[in-house]
Length: 140
Image 1 (cartoon, rainbow, N blue to C red):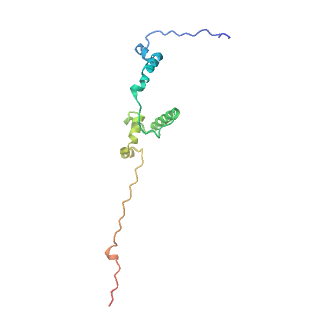
Image 2 (image 1 turned 45 degrees about the vertical axis):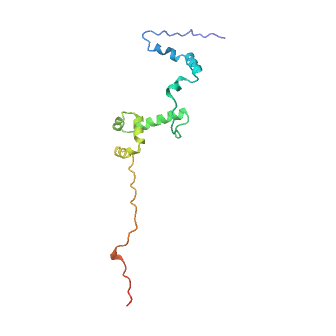
Image 3 (image 1 turned 135 degrees about the vertical axis):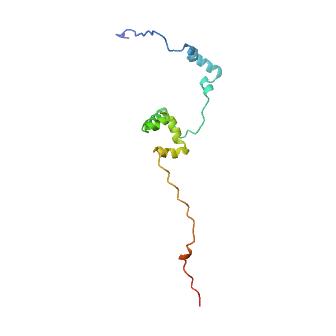
C-alpha cells in the first residue's frame, strides 16, 4: 500500500475547553447500550414518550418536512416588518395565529386576508301589497 506524501495531521487544542465533561458517561455509547439491554428501552423514549395526534397532512419524509419549514420561513419574510415584529419575528407564532379561525377579522385588518363575503339573507315568501291586488269581478 503506498504511503501518503502527507504526514499525520494533528491538532492540539489550547485554552479553555467548552466541552462539559459531566456528560461524558451519559453520552458514552457503551453505557447507553448497557442501559438499553438492562431495561429493554432506550432512555430517551422513557423521558419523552410518544406524541399522538392527527398527522395525516404531515410530510412523510425528512426532506419534505425541512422544505415545509423553509417555505413557511420564506413566506413569513414577505410579511411586512411591522407585522413580523408583532409576532417577535417568529414564524411559528405567526402560523399559530393565522391558523386560528377566530383571528380572521384581525388578519383582514392587517391586509393579510380577504374579507369573507356576507351570506345573503334568506328570502321569505311575502304576499303582494294590497294596492297591486286585482279586483275580483262580481256578478250583478
